[in-house]
Image (cartoon, rainbow, N blue to C red; front, top):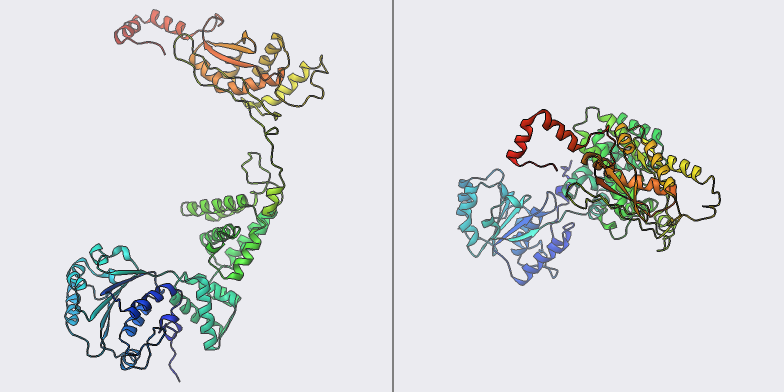
Length: 585
């Protein structure tokens, strides 16, 4: 019985043209050989299974070939090629730096460097996993690496270039190997399957390629594993079962549940996934990756970022075209938060279920207007045409209320609120103070105010309002605002102590007994102003705040009266004020 050889070894590249996924780099090496411009040291960098050692062997074999083909490949017929193919070439020495990483190992290597080739032009030393050498070994290797004999070529290979000291890097020509794309891996596995007489579905090979994460050797190892378990019939169902991969159909069903806002269905799908033994964090990460793939598939510019076969890319692009980008971005953010909080969560199942509930609510009408959308999911083009662009005349401009302090001099500190500038229809605003909405109170007061003048607002569009009003209207509007704040005793008390004083035009002054009261009123001045404007139907009304005790009832103590009383009761306070030159701010 013929001895079985794993596919990773049996189908290892033997020529530059057979190297998978590194065509540009292989072409560069071929051109260097053809032109005779060979460096004395090379450094091949890249992740595992991308062809570093294979290219080093092909390079060593080709430079010693005495009868290269017109394409620049080794002939496989000369004595040097036959010795290499039969693993008895004395001109190619391989060293594993992971197990030979000491100074003595490097000294033994240097001794071999002094021996010229018995056949061919070059002796090639391939040092794999060179980053495993100790610092002392690196330092003892520096001189030989910089000025080796003319017949010696060093090829260093590593998966972690950052661990190699700079003095070694500066002496080498550095070649960075790319991760192998999924399409390249699938094509190569199809070639292997055809050569071995194995039936393999493209979808199954795509799953294997994604599982390999850019490493051709890993892909072929997984290919052999699945082929052995399925007896040469690699199907999609058998592959995901053998590799414990979550079927993408689950994610498709979950997405349908999110769009339909079907919380129950989403939770049942998650239960089904858990019953199959899949880890919850693995599921969350898989869902996040699925949503990310949909996001990049929406735009033809970013579609190449989706590492998949052309068929899978087309399917994802078609599905993504029915989704709005905002939905995908918010869904990805929720999955990222769930993954971030997973380790710290005491009830991990609850965390995932809560995330699924939030995902189902992304398309629900939201009271906080987060932009998540509302209603049914629409194609991307529907979102760009369903809402007509607003013209400049239709644009809504909110009232601008200025509340910055105008000065610090005593006893007057002003907090002016500038007149609002409206250029378009004004939407009904919502004011909430002390737990009660001012909008309802304003509407009720407005209805009372207009009862005697029914034609005042008839057939008038909501624009910048400038209706006439009386001082009694202002008092009534102020009383309405005070009544709406009844649930907040502090604010209700402050408002009750204030009376708007006309300053001329539509401007009024509010005299507060203390800075604390002034700050309290200033914090809700915009809402108070809007409430009064709605009742009197005039958007020119504004209020200034002043700290003064002129209008304060006698039963209310001002800051000055409190300080005066303290000084009378405790004369030491007055001495302290004079000694430290204190002043009230």
